[in-house]
Amino acid sequence: MKSVKVEARHGPLKVGFILARSFTLSAFALFVDTLRLASDEADKSGRILADWQVVGSTRHLIISSCGVQVAPTSDFIDPKEFHYIVVVGGLLNTDMTIDSQTSDYLKKAAVQKVPLIGVCTGTFILARLGLMKSHQTCVSWLHYHAYREQFPGHSVRSDRLFNLDRNLGSCAGGSSAADMAAFLVRRHISRDAERNALEVLQIERARSGLDIQPRKPLEIECQDARLKAVLITMENHIEDVVPTVDLAASVGLSRRQLERLFMEEMKAPPGAVYTRIRMERA
Image: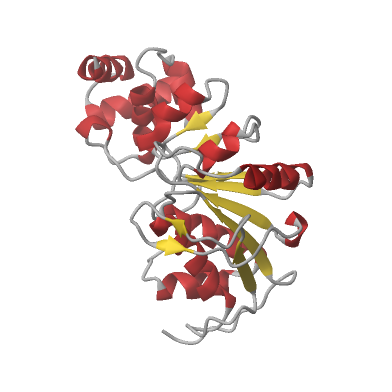
């Protein structure tokens, strides 16, 4: 890979990480390594164009869901020192995933309008603090029903990889953590920096927040990304059935266009496929 000269647009991109107890190591590692590789030429790892800290109320080791432990690198500093604060969650059955000092720090950051990003089940942590009500939260399909059950008044989806608005972000976790980090790199540094990081990570391309989470709903085969999104919505709404016109609108189609797409790809209308999904889930 050739060396690529990269330059920051508005100074170094600064990101603070908060790791919950039993956090997902892969999501954290992919996010921070994307920043590391974008920060300097090739694999030199200099903190030139990006900088990061793992902040915590103590410097005690934090154990991940796989058993590997990570120590915070900084005490809590002024949240405004960061462009983003990323909360990396993990196992949902863990009690007290963050302590009260960390909760207070996140609330302070929200008041100061520092963008907060929930990665993996970090979204649950932010939602428990009442910070995600105005955000359409992206979660993994694995955690969709748990999120809806715990936060019934919140908008949530499990078909997309990540979502970022002005002061809130959410990411399904896993490999999509690299995609979201790459998005931030492209926004704050450059496309060259993004490309440099992804090439070293052996990632062919950065997926966007509009890309569909890679899974097959109920083993139903289809190639069209819009159909995949609709099928996931159907699967997530077994009891509260979504009208066909609303399913179509969610992917930018009219009802007639969606019906035509179903007939072309699945040889059945949306209603029949929806009924099949509901019967298989019953």
